[in-house]
Length: 358
Image (cartoon, rainbow, N blue to C red; front, side, top):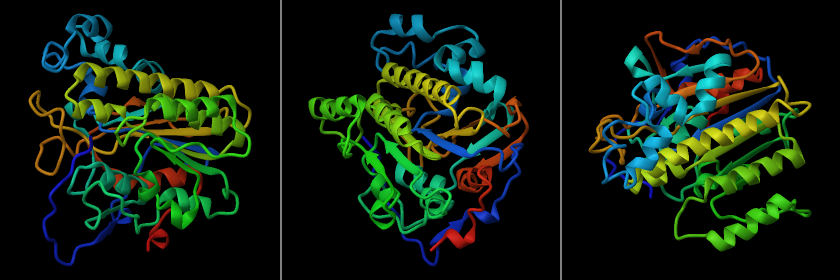
């Protein structure tokens, strides 16, 4: 269930580009041939950096079976808790990559759009703009040029860019009718002249498990994306996972934690595939983040929106060639999601700038 927001009238304010808010990341540009962008919808920085919340994991309102979930994810020490919840992040990325957004150290990552909802968040993350015409989650084609289509328009990347997402609105967010990108979202079947066994499984399971929801099970999205990788070897992949947000909105903290843990495992699986596949090994950067935060309190953790404190607070993880192994970045700084298209394009030696905007 996605938030629906009430919009206020703005006069004379439309698109704010990222280029006026540049930041220097300790990441060497042009060191990788491939880029994987991964998002986990609505996953809070609090759980990423401190693991399971001590109030929420003990609340029968949000965690019906507290004993089982505590056996899986609870420890007295926050560093231990976060490693139980997200072992790939804290065993691999923390050792070989970079992690941003622990506000307890003054390291801040935020969305800068006013609305703190998914469509505005993904628009900002993928186009570098905060566009007040995009203020809610609706089936509206995005007028802004996104990073994926910008890269796909280059000869060396043409036909080598794809997106697989659990949330069904991504064909609109990425404006797939305009650019023809391969975008498989929600419960859309995979269309191909020759389907792999995994793709047949995804299509069949789609039909069997389809619910009256806008978000497909992340596991099916992951299988579809991985099959595409194995068959087509794209250079740029966007993987959008969504069940963390779904179960948070359902006020199920236990399942929110489970889905975060599963997302960590899928990212680990993808990294293992990359590091054991010629052409991708030591030649692929992962950028992992989220579209928005959530309420910062134990009473509003399950919602997000314009006037809910914490909703704009996010995080960022980077891993791969050219990414200095600095682990958790504890410097006091402020990063915004609209700065990330510039970072992601530079990793491939491309400048996603003003000329990419309509």
